[in-house]
Image (cartoon, rainbow, N blue to C red; front, top):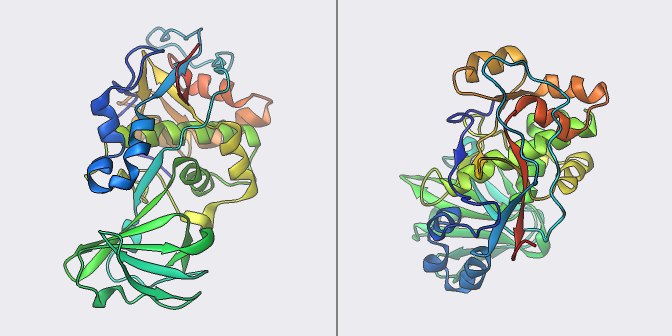
Length: 316
């Protein structure tokens, strides 16, 4: 799978290693959240305190033409409090007139939170008979929602588009990453390769949280962005890789790296060679087999970058 993007960019979301996120960037992270949903204003205020703390020893960019070296391990920042960011993923592969249901009791609400319909496990959601252009589907007790039979965590916003809908999956960022890791890389691969994939996927996602595709969603579920298949691609190992790198992203000169990657070195060269650094997933696996840790793998492919950890509150 190839995650396409705009290159090895340091998005100017973070200015200095110990500064708070700019207010305009926070608006982009969760566009119109406070205005659209008063109940979530406190969450928006909390997110204004999010910072990224970089490792003290940032690695300078290598000279032009210098071959990557596996010895360039990126220093890992100290642990911090997890950041409860939400990802909004358009299920473009399921757009149109999908069948909707849930593994548990569900309810369909309008944009004002009024319950329109309720149903039980496996019962179809008759969304097409509802007049509201803004519908939300939720399931009790964290049960999975089913879109054309495929399971997804979180909530679904159903956006009308002509006679059909585009489901928008709202879920915690770290849950999204666990799915992307499994969709982009075999979960049987080395844990260090999976951890490198988790950091690259999180950094790529955060760049798009800061610069969303449109006002309703941050990025899609296809390889135009990153492959995302909901719970279908989540395993115990992809969750472990995500948890063990919780909050870690790639940073360059204080900004977010939109970390590109592809299946192998040939594709990274053909697709991303003119854009900058890109990770070969097969190469990451080979480096892991040779005994390299995830931060060495990342240092090999993203020279000049450093690791940053998202955290809430002041850095000390």
